[in-house]
Every structure is written in C-alpha cells, then in structure tokens.
Length: 284
Image (tube, rainbow, N blue to C red):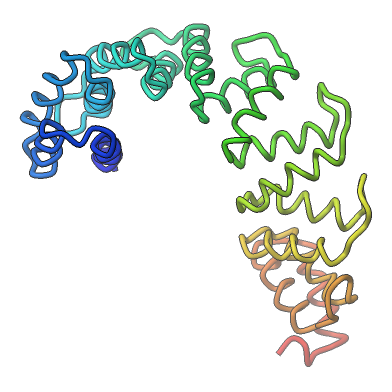
C-alpha cells in the first residue's frame, strides 16, 4: 500500500514533468531498484525540482523501498515546502502532530497545517477547521472553523460539507440557517456521505426548518439504507408500511425491517414480530 501511494505521487509528478530523469526513476522503482530511483530523484531534488523533493520525502517517511528515516524525510519536505509545495507542508504538519522524527508539537503542526490550508490543501483545511471548532491545540473559534470548512467544502470535501450543515442547522457559532444547512447536507449527501443522507432525510421527514416532503425523505432514507444505516432502514420500512411519500408495500417493509433487525435494531425486531403476526404473507 505504501509503495502504491509513492507510485501515485511519482505518476502525478511525471504528468507535470515528463522528462527523462523522472521516467528513469519510475522505471527503476517499479523494477525494484529503489536505490537507483532514490539517487535519480535526489539529483533532481538538489537541482531544485520540487516534485522530486516531495517524492524523496515520501520515500523516506514511509520507508518505500529504502530505510525509513524521518530526519531525511523532514529535510526533503522542508525543501519542497520552502518552494511552496502544499503536500510537503501538510506532511511536515503531520510529522509534528504525530511526533515522527521530531518531538510532538501541536502548535508547530497547526502552523504548518495552516500554511498548507492557505495553499489550498483540502485535508489541511479540514484539520484546521476542526481544530478551531473543537479547540484542539488552539483557541476555539467557530467563525474561523466555518471559514476553513467552507474552503474545504468548496473543494468537494464531503466531511466538511456535512460539518458545515450541522453548524448551520444547530447555530453553532453562527446564526441558525436551515437554508444553508439544507444546501450543505445536499452537497454532502450527493457525495454519498451517510450521516448527511440520514440527516437530510430527517429534515424532510419532520419538516424541520423546511417544508415537509415525504418523497424526498424516502429517497434519502433509501440512500442511507443502501449504505447499511439501521435507523434509516427502520424508518424506511415504516414509510413503506404507511405509504408515506412512497407506494405502500409491506413486503418492502419486511425487507428493510429485517435488514435493520439483523443489526440488532430493537424497534425493528419488535415491529417485525408484529408485522409477521398481522400480515404473515409479507414475511415469506
């Protein structure tokens, strides 16, 4: 897995720098000649090639075909970071956060995460946002959290889209705004983020802050149910039983309650017993 990660970076590097040294480095790495690959990249790195510097940092940090050496990883990451490479900035932050080759230092980690975030690294934007939201190693600041979650959300990060939706729904540090909550839940739900699908369905089902819409509720509960959410399966079964926004179908009620019951959903188990007593034909 680690070698695959490094190869991906090399391939990306090649797409931007399709020159002979990188082709040789890739060929050497894939053939198992890691030392040759390292030496080719090292030469390019010393010549100021940022992608080579990043790839060397990754090789040393993960021990991809060579001895794992955090100090050398940090050396090459710093070179790439100095040249504005956001991935290198992110990896430096991660090393300080987890104490790899350096003493753990949350303040320094956050400094580097913020550099990467300002450089549009989506993972760093999410981490900075969460740090501000929860007050992890930094003073809690919901406005700054929203700022960085928005940055990441606009880069299509589903977790950030979901977190923004929750913030606007609950009014955490911002004015409660169901329209914005709905907007971001929809974006995250479209990205198959399970909790967003469930919460979106619930907003539509209960009409919380928006017009009640059983059809849309059924659709999004179904999406969450497909991903194995037991509560969504239970509610969807109930909607099929009563024909809420969807055609009444006791056979499908049985199907979804059975799926929820298999996950030890107590209410589904009880409801399943009642259904099979009242409509045994639906449980065949």
